[in-house]
Image 1 (tube, rainbow, N blue to C red):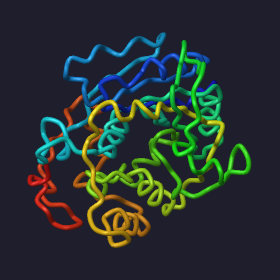
Image 2 (cartoon, helix red, strand yellow):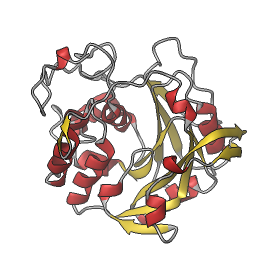
Image 3 (cartoon, rainbow, N blue to C red):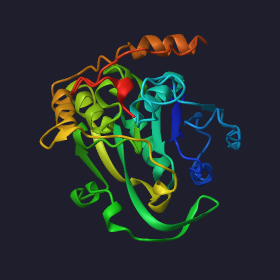
Image 4 (cartoon, one colour):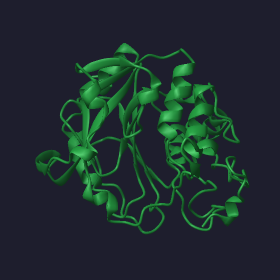
Length: 305
């Protein structure tokens, strides 16, 4: 159980028609122990007739679409919907009321020690980087994994590096699919890099690099903080478009990484702390109109299909 002055917001993210949220909800319900927890579901399809999120005991649930952004949704500048996980994660950061926030991606089920590891990270004041395995033929019943087939290409590469349950590390191996940190940590670098990584991905590693550069936080990779994900279900829906422009190593992802390696703050066309304060007062999210061009090759974003 968390200390009285600590609280946790758990954020779940999806842009899928069938994210198997019941796997997550049932597995989380098995691990709660009177913790002061809220759940934030950031769901691209929320305003398209999606059913409400099923209740989770007395846990307050906020179910929202991603905040307005230029890459996807009704306010996009692009011609189609592009990948922008940084925006979804910043949406949750703005809405979160807890002292800490944990992230979970869709198609996931929490393994039994996940919440214990989250509690430990909060109480011992470090950023927890959870582990994952993508597996095939995943069968989950009442929040418990009943069967699956191993899928070695989908296994977290960090598992082979870690020699113990917890391993001290830097932010360069931070992945967004299973993660717990203080809200203040995210705000200290102005959130995830939307301008840098919109339409690209790679926002989690870039975020971790900048956060590590602040020298304010310690990181531990925790292989006990495990989620299993369904490999096949990643390909049921048409994926949101993303592209790494250029030719490696002179490509957009390497340029983004180099920028993050020298950063402690992402400009993002906004101040996330100010937006969060306004949203927590009940004001709406702002509707961005910029940037109008891709920072990497200066292509008009309105021309990106």
